[in-house]
Structure formats: structure tokens, C-alpha cells
Length: 243
Image (cartoon, rainbow, N blue to C red; front, side, top):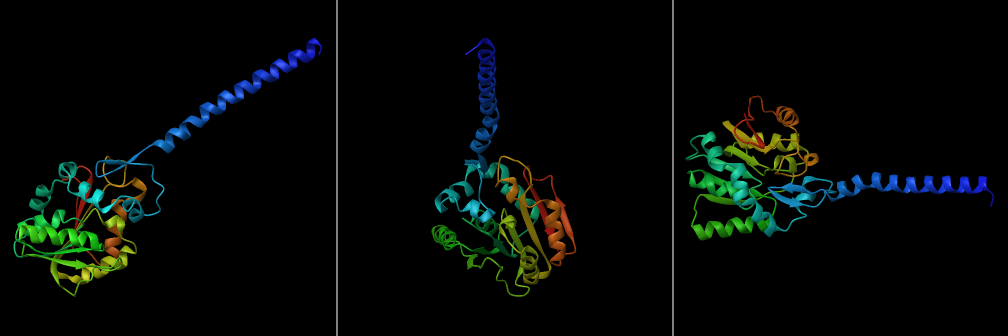
């Protein structure tokens, strides 16, 4: 091999080495991105590849969900006493708690003197609330297993419907909340509490949340004409009182 050939071969080796180094550098962000973790109710989870909010939630067992729903970390951001004070005197009200889960709000509403319908699609969650009712001898909570596509309310059955951290789980929301509206008495209201659609330390990944303007639009399409929106009471959630 002559001098010219040796020079060309050396240049080729240097170019190949530089290309490999560049590939390593550009690949690194993808590895880091795949390793990023999302948080739900203050707890970390692996990277999200679930299609819906329901798929995402059901990556966790019922026991894990209950632990998060009833955790001090949730109390810290959910501020239940502040929320209940904001809703005013609930004594004597008949309230459906949609997506009651472990009974986090249902129990507290009952303690404030409301008659509560603890509604959920899950048999396991209904059984958990049943045990809490029995253990605490609570008389003003009734259980209602509901389907995914309906609140299963009779016309004008309740004074209020409360739905906390569950709006983003519901599909065909305009149709669903049209049914909710029919179930609320003429002077009653729907209260929606859900996460801001942005990266925050709690709740599902942002792509599973529903932004506030979309929620307002959907509720109006469902027949609600008066929307009172509060974005200041809670750090990570908005509140809508709809009539």
C-alpha cells in the first residue's frame, strides 16, 4: 500500500470513529426519555404507553390505588376540608359521588350530614366502601354500581353530583353529562374537580387529562348554562360548579 492509499485509509478510519461517537451522543436522549417516570397522586410510575386514562389507572392494583387515594400525600393537595367548606352547608342534601373509589369524599360528605350515593363502576371499590360503612356504622351512604356510560340516576333524584379526578376517565362525555343533568334537581348543581392539563406532580400524564376549556365546552353542550369556575382554591385542580 503506497503513501496516498495509507493516508486515505487513515481518513476513513477517523471518519468512522467520529460517526460512532455521534451516534452514541444522539441516542442518549432517547434512552433517558424512555426511562422518565410519570407520577399519579404523588407516586411514581414507569413511562406511559397506555391508550386511555382507564388503561393507565388499571396498571395499578386495587390495593395500590386505595393506598394512594387515602394517602397523606393526597390530603396535602386535595384539601378535602377546604373543598367541603367551599361547597357550603351540605346537611340534608342528597349527593351522588361519581367515581367514589375507596370512599374518600363519600365518607366526608356523609359526616357533613349529606345523604350520599357512592357510585362507581368497580365491584371491588364498592366492596371497600361497604366495609367502611359497616365498620363505622354509617347510615347515610348507599352504594350504587353504575355502568361506564351512565350515572344511573332517576330524573331529579339528587341535589348535587360530585365528580372528583374522574372526569377525564369518562368517554362520550356530552352524552354522559346530559344524563347527569337530568338526574339533578332544578336548583341543584354538578361539581367537577379535576387536574389542570399540564405537567404537575400529581394525577395521570398530561395526555390523559382534559383541559379546562374543553370541560366547559362539553358541559355547555350537555345542557349546563351556568358555570362557576374556580382555579385558585386548589394548587393542581380546577373546580367547576355547573347548573
